[in-house]
Length: 312
Image (cartoon, rainbow, N blue to C red):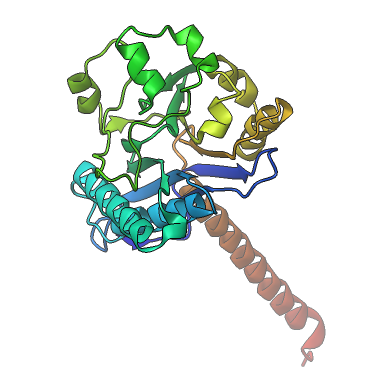
């Protein structure tokens, strides 16, 4: 793909270290492309990684994941996005695990990741761990990803009730993460309803986004203290950057100690994208300048003809 400086959608992001006074081990990246020289289809790739492990090792793992996965996406032809994401996640996980084995101070480091890849208006996602991706459409918020935690597995098996999850001591026990001894397979379920099968969820990949759709990628520093039912009211009616700030502010107001990272991506309403709007702004400005220049030349010529040229 070919890197571009102007995104085809609206994007905002904020990362906050939380209130525990520790280093921020979250990492994120947002990249804008067009598919190729002959294919101008716009593409946006966003990723969040939440590092785990002491001695700043989580920070290293998260950085490696963001850089490796983003680079492999950038070097791809975007023809098979789910295969590309799965391969990139596995390569990244293996690299993290290898570095941890070579450096005892980084032993046990790892990271989550949540990836959202827009090709045109089609959405493809992949995740490992408990960083999440949400879709807000027409006022309804849907968690598209599935957490890879002990808690989630216990709920799915009926061992634990959802309302008991926030108070369970195993709340943050991950069952899948990058850097583990067993290379994780990317979860490519895109779940639009809670009751649909895994097969149906995977078939939702390539979901067509519509004007007004809002994507939220976030680390668990947000979702630990801000409920799903609170997210839509917090962002309603705000511009994108203010909405991102509102989510972070809500988490910190509740003494959120974990790192908090949010990415918001909004599909523009109407027919104009940010790129098109910018193009027409400069086109209109150029037209106005040309008109003014033409008027200036015409006026100058008229003055010269009537007042400055000698009369014979």
